Amino acid sequence: MNKRFPPIPQFVEPYPDESCYSILCRCMVRSAMSTGRFSQAMFGKQKYLSCFLWQPFRNEEASRWFDDGTSRAQRYLLEHSCIPYRYPFMNKRGRLDIDNWYDGEKLSLGLYHGITRDLGYRCWTKRFLYYCPECVKNDRKNFGETYWHMIPQLPGVFICPAHAVPLEQSTILMNNQWIDLHPAEYWLSNTEPRRETISYADLQLATDSKWMMENGWKAEIKLGSLLEGLTNWQFEQAEAKTQQFTTQHNVKNETVYHVLLANMKGMSISDFVEQKNC
Image 1 (tube, rainbow, N blue to C red):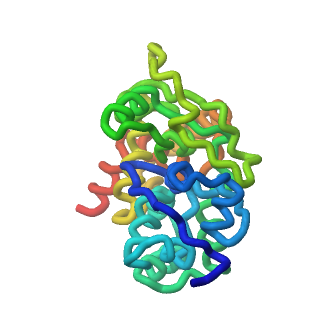
Image 2 (image 1 turned 120 degrees about the horizontal axis):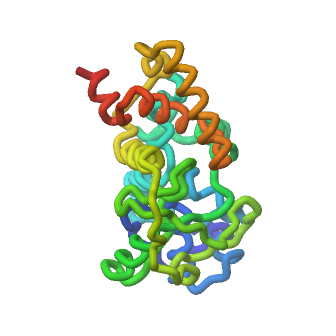
């Protein structure tokens, strides 16, 4: 056995919409290790763990965590990273690299960094972890514990698309994390949602973001096709609303821009993709 990677006592089964970071948090709790020792055991070195909110595990890291190796690791890579969210808007080469990787091609360090740049996680991740109080209550009822969901961490998402309530900002600051892991069950106590009027535009963006996380692998969305049929006035309005949203929520993200363009046409992203495929 490779002494650089000591065995992990127990690797957890992921919950629905659970981020890679949250999976690591729960695994660490069950291992009874400190975060530093746990990172050393998982990766052979201390690692910038907050990036696993969205970045995928590398094959050679994840495959050793499971008895059946790469096949199960690939499911984790697909279902618990942000790749489906960005995939519809990536260029042809980026999409091909990810397709080949998911089909079993080894993910080299260079390709890994290339995919990371395409995902743009450094440019648009929120500074803090977010959560939905209603989801916390449901998690504890259904699973006996809560966890960090992926969708609340998406740029521009400040409404829970499942419960239509405002998301809450946790005290977990992610920008400067190094090896710290903060299990949601230990940190989240507020389960009472704020009762306030929510914006339809914010709810639509959250709903579209959820759709992309669930269906992004099947879609290809080009900026040119989103602009088709827009008058100059509509385009200017779309630009102005996008800038307003970006300034209001401190979000600068290409995917958010695409979604808002579709919404300006009076369509959801799912409607737009369905129409283009007809």
